[in-house]
Image 1 (cartoon, helix red, strand yellow):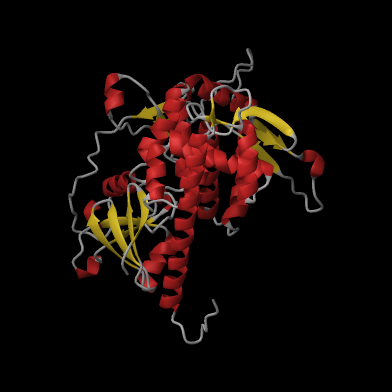
Image 2: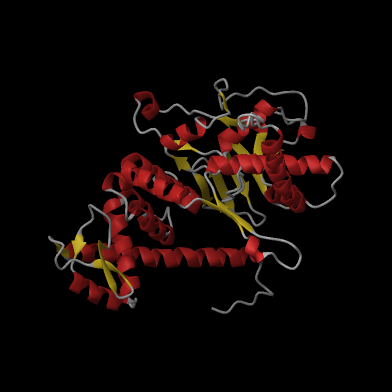
Length: 428
């Protein structure tokens, strides 16, 4: 329909668009239900004659949905794809996504039918789980049940990674070893440009990458303190050379002249572990670590390797109760409060923002100048962009309880942000 935008308010346009999205999703849900009924009527008992995925002209031999989902007739699928008006490869993948959800992700499928999750999001999740064992897919389904509407892609991929670690450890270890074999560090000295610059690219163990990044950051900061007025990027680039030359000098100057043994000691590396006690941890089953910088699940074997690197210092801190509310009188936020808030919320608390809390400002929900306490219950991580939006625009939020926030957009739309992610609320 044609709209005269000169006479229609922005709020009305947003409502019109939202209504269209709801109508589109309702039609897709009806299509999925019909495809599910079609699949029930066209199940075959053996792999012979069953539909499989193709890549170009090659048949992969992989069923269109994961283990435990029914096999459907290859010839009957051809007709369905034609009725859907999709290409052969795209149609197989699409029908497979529907079957994957209906049989292996039943909680997700029910949430989609009820309108709690968009069909396109369910499709993406089905793609991620198709290769998982049945119990791993069920694990993902259970953990997404309450949160799937607000979980971002990175979180979904991390959940699938955790499912592989828990339920297919041999595959997880094989993938980890294969990734380790891809590690490299290349300085392209054969491609020096006209300005005397070269490119460096590397794929490193995360522990090594963390240590290198810390060393470069410290050297760049020191250069600024000593009067280097270059940009941060330039100072970091200079730092790489400084660190390299320092290492070369150590080898020359601090080696035993008789034996040749290098006696210099590295300043050491620090590893900090936050251990969250769960029922599985208490029973000694399904140990899975999680990297704070990326939030990615990692194998315990990898954590052990990092802790066993020579010169590593392991810091064990007292138990942190994330529910503690101990206000202080000052506006400045003490380190112990910053740690509690960032461990509690993990990311910026603006709707759907994935920025890590360690890189965010901590906002006083009730301004300190208006009597707001400097206390974890009144502190909210917001990235700089969304902190400015809250301060300088009509975006507003309320703290329902620590870790749960109700946002209101400039045109009256409401969003709940919590541990499960972002949920768009009805009524505005």
